[in-house]
Image 1 (spheres, rainbow, N blue to C red):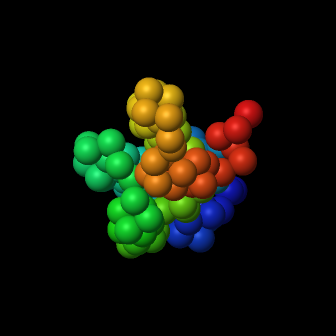
Image 2: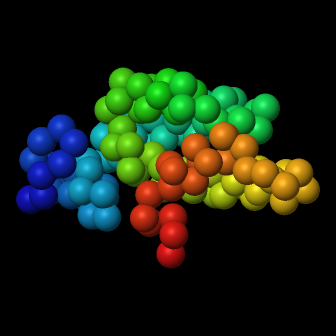
Length: 117
Ligand SMILES: [Zn+2]
């Protein structure tokens, strides 16, 4: 029987039916993680509603993810589409104005290697 990577519980026969083999989590942890990822995404969009992601805002987002026991890399992958949308807006602005903002620089720095495929 598989063991959940999040809570360490060994799932029984019934648990193995709903066990997420991709993430290695039991159904309870999988559901909690999905909710936490949704909260992270909502918070990201809220913080970036003015089109700026500062290091301070990112620190708050990271702290929220840590509080929710989220893997920060998994959280970054989850908001990939939102990050790319924001980056697109910032780069369009930078092209129009001839300079790259600190926010765009900050966002580029955030992108983990998995975003660059
Ligand atoms: Zn679990």
